[in-house]
Image (cartoon, rainbow, N blue to C red; front, side, top):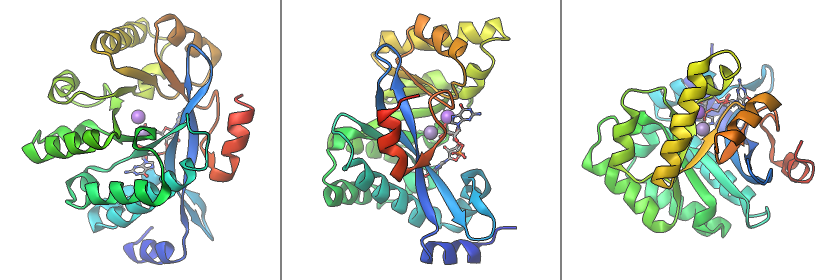
Length: 250
Ligand code: G
Ligand code: G
Ligand code: MN
Ligand code: NA
């Protein structure tokens, strides 16, 4: 079992690092961004998935430090990439409630010299669950800085559509559960069609997650989905492999 103590020690020993997974433009087949996905490189257990430590990090508040680390590293790494390549960072609802968030994003951009438009922040519906004034103010402040805001895991929460009215998101990330069932379920095709249509009407980029094969990609292309991400292109890999992922997109 992982303990708070282990996580604190691991932070000291620098065992956390973001991995990167490419996001491709479907029409042009080009890589347009990378999503930062946190990994714990444990000396005994090897790579630990965030599924196994983010909940504890959120309970203990360590997510603030971890989130800071991801944000700073992702901006610093992205600043070394070609300047038409963006970087997407996941934000926990706990981070989002932290009054220091705006300052921390500002600092990450200033220190790295990364243009704000190259940073995308991914939030899930749970951030909007309270739909509080403070949440919306923070989103608008981030947007005013030039940062882009994505709605992650779209379709898995409660009332997704109302969230699209509460804030003008730049991007909708279609949850991978819809993509994985494309070959076997007619209704998944209908859902993908509806969401990409919604994106087009609202002027919001749509990104399909969890794309694992060519049949899925072809269908997404046919439905006019803007971007695709998944094992078909690459697993998440360390920053040192980004050049390779750009050079050899498949
Ligand atoms: O990369 P992987 O599939 O193991 O990620 C599992 C989950 O952890 C996903 O829901 C992903 O959004 C989340 N996650 C990955 N990296 C981060 C991070 O840096 N911060 C937060 N809050 N969540 C992350
Ligand atoms: O919740 P979020 O969308 O941020 O999580 C992304 C998660 O999806 C990461 O844990 C990442 O490792 C995982 N992932 C990325 N591509 C694929 C894929 O093609 N198939 C599956 N099953 N998982 C994927
Ligand atoms: Mn994400
Ligand atoms: Na997702």
